[in-house]
Image (cartoon, rainbow, N blue to C red; front, side, top):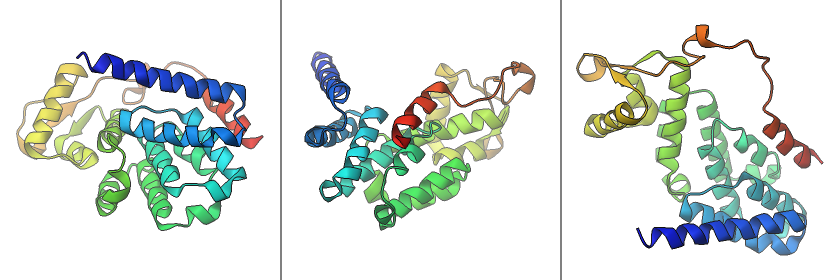
Length: 233
Protein backbone atom coordinates (compact mmCIF):
# COMPACT_ATOMS: atom_id res chain seq x y z
CA UNK A 1 0.00 0.00 0.00
CA UNK A 2 2.85 2.32 0.84
CA UNK A 3 4.29 2.01 -2.65
CA UNK A 4 0.95 2.74 -4.36
CA UNK A 5 0.57 6.24 -2.94
CA UNK A 6 3.97 7.57 -4.17
CA UNK A 7 3.32 5.91 -7.54
CA UNK A 8 -0.06 7.61 -7.83
CA UNK A 9 1.53 10.92 -6.88
CA UNK A 10 4.19 10.45 -9.54
CA UNK A 11 1.54 9.68 -12.17
CA UNK A 12 -0.37 12.81 -11.18
CA UNK A 13 2.79 14.90 -11.41
CA UNK A 14 3.55 13.56 -14.90
CA UNK A 15 -0.02 14.24 -16.02
CA UNK A 16 0.12 17.77 -14.61
CA UNK A 17 3.45 18.48 -16.33
CA UNK A 18 2.01 17.37 -19.69
CA UNK A 19 -1.13 19.40 -19.10
CA UNK A 20 1.02 22.48 -18.55
CA UNK A 21 2.97 21.79 -21.76
CA UNK A 22 -0.28 21.58 -23.72
CA UNK A 23 -1.58 24.78 -22.15
CA UNK A 24 1.54 26.82 -22.96
CA UNK A 25 2.18 25.83 -26.58
CA UNK A 26 0.57 22.65 -27.95
CA UNK A 27 2.09 23.25 -31.41
CA UNK A 28 5.70 23.42 -30.24
CA UNK A 29 7.59 20.46 -31.78
CA UNK A 30 10.02 20.55 -28.87
CA UNK A 31 7.39 18.89 -26.66
CA UNK A 32 7.09 15.91 -29.01
CA UNK A 33 9.46 13.64 -27.00
CA UNK A 34 7.59 14.49 -23.79
CA UNK A 35 4.28 13.51 -25.37
CA UNK A 36 5.76 10.26 -26.70
CA UNK A 37 7.07 9.41 -23.24
CA UNK A 38 3.63 10.20 -21.87
CA UNK A 39 2.03 7.66 -24.23
CA UNK A 40 4.35 5.01 -22.81
CA UNK A 41 3.49 6.22 -19.30
CA UNK A 42 -0.22 5.81 -20.10
CA UNK A 43 0.46 2.25 -21.26
CA UNK A 44 2.49 1.23 -18.21
CA UNK A 45 0.25 2.95 -15.65
CA UNK A 46 -3.03 2.06 -17.43
CA UNK A 47 -4.11 5.70 -17.54
CA UNK A 48 -5.38 7.64 -20.52
CA UNK A 49 -5.31 11.16 -21.97
CA UNK A 50 -7.05 11.66 -25.29
CA UNK A 51 -6.14 15.35 -25.43
CA UNK A 52 -2.40 14.68 -25.07
CA UNK A 53 -2.55 11.91 -27.67
CA UNK A 54 -4.44 14.06 -30.17
CA UNK A 55 -1.87 16.81 -29.66
CA UNK A 56 0.95 14.36 -30.42
CA UNK A 57 -0.78 13.15 -33.58
CA UNK A 58 -1.22 16.77 -34.73
CA UNK A 59 2.50 17.40 -34.18
CA UNK A 60 3.31 14.27 -36.19
CA UNK A 61 1.44 15.81 -39.12
CA UNK A 62 4.02 18.59 -39.22
CA UNK A 63 6.97 16.42 -38.18
CA UNK A 64 6.30 13.25 -40.19
CA UNK A 65 9.96 12.25 -40.29
CA UNK A 66 9.85 12.02 -36.50
CA UNK A 67 6.72 9.87 -36.37
CA UNK A 68 6.97 6.66 -34.33
CA UNK A 69 4.55 4.08 -35.71
CA UNK A 70 4.91 2.11 -32.47
CA UNK A 71 3.65 5.12 -30.51
CA UNK A 72 0.82 5.69 -32.99
CA UNK A 73 -0.25 2.05 -32.69
CA UNK A 74 -0.31 2.32 -28.90
CA UNK A 75 -2.45 5.47 -29.13
CA UNK A 76 -4.95 3.64 -31.34
CA UNK A 77 -5.10 0.61 -29.04
CA UNK A 78 -5.77 2.91 -26.07
CA UNK A 79 -8.47 4.64 -28.14
CA UNK A 80 -10.12 1.27 -28.86
CA UNK A 81 -10.19 0.64 -25.11
CA UNK A 82 -12.06 3.93 -24.63
CA UNK A 83 -15.08 2.82 -26.67
CA UNK A 84 -17.96 3.73 -26.89
CA UNK A 85 -16.31 7.16 -26.99
CA UNK A 86 -15.39 8.12 -30.61
CA UNK A 87 -11.70 8.46 -29.72
CA UNK A 88 -10.50 5.96 -32.34
CA UNK A 89 -12.08 7.92 -35.20
CA UNK A 90 -10.74 11.21 -33.83
CA UNK A 91 -7.22 9.79 -33.72
CA UNK A 92 -7.46 8.05 -37.09
CA UNK A 93 -8.48 11.34 -38.72
CA UNK A 94 -5.03 12.74 -37.86
CA UNK A 95 -2.99 9.79 -39.17
CA UNK A 96 -1.76 10.02 -42.78
CA UNK A 97 -3.36 7.57 -45.19
CA UNK A 98 0.01 6.05 -46.14
CA UNK A 99 0.55 5.14 -42.49
CA UNK A 100 -2.96 3.71 -42.19
CA UNK A 101 -2.09 1.32 -45.02
CA UNK A 102 0.56 -0.41 -42.92
CA UNK A 103 -0.51 -3.88 -41.83
CA UNK A 104 -0.78 -3.19 -38.09
CA UNK A 105 -3.00 -0.17 -38.68
CA UNK A 106 -5.22 -2.01 -41.15
CA UNK A 107 -5.67 -4.63 -38.43
CA UNK A 108 -6.62 -2.02 -35.83
CA UNK A 109 -9.13 -0.46 -38.24
CA UNK A 110 -10.72 -3.89 -38.78
CA UNK A 111 -10.87 -4.45 -35.02
CA UNK A 112 -12.53 -1.06 -34.60
CA UNK A 113 -15.14 -1.95 -37.22
CA UNK A 114 -15.96 -5.21 -35.47
CA UNK A 115 -16.43 -3.40 -32.16
CA UNK A 116 -18.56 -0.64 -33.65
CA UNK A 117 -20.86 -3.23 -35.23
CA UNK A 118 -21.00 -5.47 -32.17
CA UNK A 119 -19.33 -8.43 -33.93
CA UNK A 120 -17.46 -9.58 -30.86
CA UNK A 121 -16.78 -13.16 -31.96
CA UNK A 122 -14.99 -11.88 -35.07
CA UNK A 123 -13.21 -9.26 -32.97
CA UNK A 124 -11.74 -11.77 -30.52
CA UNK A 125 -10.76 -14.08 -33.34
CA UNK A 126 -8.90 -11.29 -35.16
CA UNK A 127 -7.33 -10.03 -31.93
CA UNK A 128 -6.00 -13.52 -31.14
CA UNK A 129 -4.16 -13.51 -34.48
CA UNK A 130 -2.52 -10.17 -33.65
CA UNK A 131 -1.57 -10.52 -30.00
CA UNK A 132 1.73 -8.73 -30.63
CA UNK A 133 -0.25 -5.54 -31.30
CA UNK A 134 -2.94 -5.58 -28.63
CA UNK A 135 -1.08 -7.29 -25.80
CA UNK A 136 1.56 -4.56 -25.89
CA UNK A 137 -1.00 -2.47 -23.96
CA UNK A 138 -1.91 -3.84 -20.50
CA UNK A 139 -5.62 -3.87 -19.69
CA UNK A 140 -6.69 -4.21 -23.31
CA UNK A 141 -8.78 -7.35 -22.79
CA UNK A 142 -10.59 -5.95 -19.76
CA UNK A 143 -11.25 -2.65 -21.55
CA UNK A 144 -12.92 -4.44 -24.45
CA UNK A 145 -14.87 -6.69 -22.09
CA UNK A 146 -16.22 -3.58 -20.35
CA UNK A 147 -17.31 -2.22 -23.73
CA UNK A 148 -18.97 -5.54 -24.66
CA UNK A 149 -20.91 -5.53 -21.38
CA UNK A 150 -21.94 -1.93 -22.11
CA UNK A 151 -23.30 -2.93 -25.54
CA UNK A 152 -25.16 -5.93 -24.12
CA UNK A 153 -26.71 -3.77 -21.39
CA UNK A 154 -28.16 -1.50 -24.08
CA UNK A 155 -29.59 -4.45 -26.00
CA UNK A 156 -30.77 -7.07 -23.52
CA UNK A 157 -33.00 -7.18 -20.49
CA UNK A 158 -31.97 -10.81 -20.06
CA UNK A 159 -28.83 -11.98 -21.80
CA UNK A 160 -28.15 -15.70 -22.36
CA UNK A 161 -24.98 -16.94 -20.74
CA UNK A 162 -23.73 -18.19 -24.12
CA UNK A 163 -24.12 -14.73 -25.70
CA UNK A 164 -22.25 -13.09 -22.83
CA UNK A 165 -19.48 -15.71 -23.04
CA UNK A 166 -18.94 -15.03 -26.75
CA UNK A 167 -19.03 -11.24 -26.29
CA UNK A 168 -16.40 -11.14 -23.53
CA UNK A 169 -14.41 -14.20 -24.67
CA UNK A 170 -14.61 -15.99 -21.31
CA UNK A 171 -15.86 -19.47 -20.49
CA UNK A 172 -16.09 -21.98 -17.67
CA UNK A 173 -14.88 -21.14 -14.18
CA UNK A 174 -13.48 -17.79 -15.32
CA UNK A 175 -16.98 -16.84 -16.51
CA UNK A 176 -18.46 -17.98 -13.19
CA UNK A 177 -16.08 -15.63 -11.35
CA UNK A 178 -16.91 -12.81 -13.80
CA UNK A 179 -20.62 -13.30 -13.09
CA UNK A 180 -20.06 -13.45 -9.33
CA UNK A 181 -18.22 -10.13 -9.49
CA UNK A 182 -21.00 -8.39 -11.42
CA UNK A 183 -23.75 -9.88 -9.26
CA UNK A 184 -21.97 -8.42 -6.24
CA UNK A 185 -21.01 -5.07 -7.77
CA UNK A 186 -23.19 -4.27 -10.81
CA UNK A 187 -26.68 -5.35 -9.83
CA UNK A 188 -26.80 -8.40 -12.11
CA UNK A 189 -29.21 -11.21 -11.25
CA UNK A 190 -28.75 -14.85 -12.28
CA UNK A 191 -31.99 -16.58 -13.15
CA UNK A 192 -32.34 -20.25 -12.32
CA UNK A 193 -30.85 -22.48 -14.93
CA UNK A 194 -27.66 -24.33 -15.59
CA UNK A 195 -24.90 -24.19 -18.20
CA UNK A 196 -25.29 -22.26 -21.44
CA UNK A 197 -29.05 -21.95 -20.94
CA UNK A 198 -28.65 -19.70 -17.92
CA UNK A 199 -30.00 -16.14 -18.22
CA UNK A 200 -28.47 -13.01 -16.67
CA UNK A 201 -30.88 -10.20 -15.79
CA UNK A 202 -29.18 -6.85 -16.45
CA UNK A 203 -30.01 -3.59 -14.66
CA UNK A 204 -32.83 -1.56 -16.17
CA UNK A 205 -31.90 1.45 -18.28
CA UNK A 206 -33.61 3.65 -20.88
CA UNK A 207 -32.27 1.51 -23.72
CA UNK A 208 -33.21 -1.99 -22.62
CA UNK A 209 -36.42 -0.59 -21.07
CA UNK A 210 -37.60 2.16 -23.49
CA UNK A 211 -40.38 3.18 -21.13
CA UNK A 212 -37.69 4.71 -18.90
CA UNK A 213 -36.44 6.99 -21.68
CA UNK A 214 -36.82 10.69 -20.95
CA UNK A 215 -38.05 13.11 -23.57
CA UNK A 216 -34.75 14.75 -24.39
CA UNK A 217 -33.36 15.93 -27.70
CA UNK A 218 -30.73 13.66 -29.19
CA UNK A 219 -27.47 15.39 -29.98
CA UNK A 220 -23.72 15.11 -30.00
CA UNK A 221 -22.21 15.60 -26.52
CA UNK A 222 -20.62 19.04 -26.18
CA UNK A 223 -17.23 17.63 -25.19
CA UNK A 224 -17.04 15.70 -28.46
CA UNK A 225 -17.77 18.84 -30.47
CA UNK A 226 -15.11 20.74 -28.51
CA UNK A 227 -12.51 18.13 -29.45
CA UNK A 228 -13.42 18.10 -33.11
CA UNK A 229 -13.04 21.85 -33.74
CA UNK A 230 -9.28 22.07 -32.90
CA UNK A 231 -8.66 19.06 -35.18
CA UNK A 232 -10.49 20.63 -38.09
CA UNK A 233 -8.65 23.89 -37.48
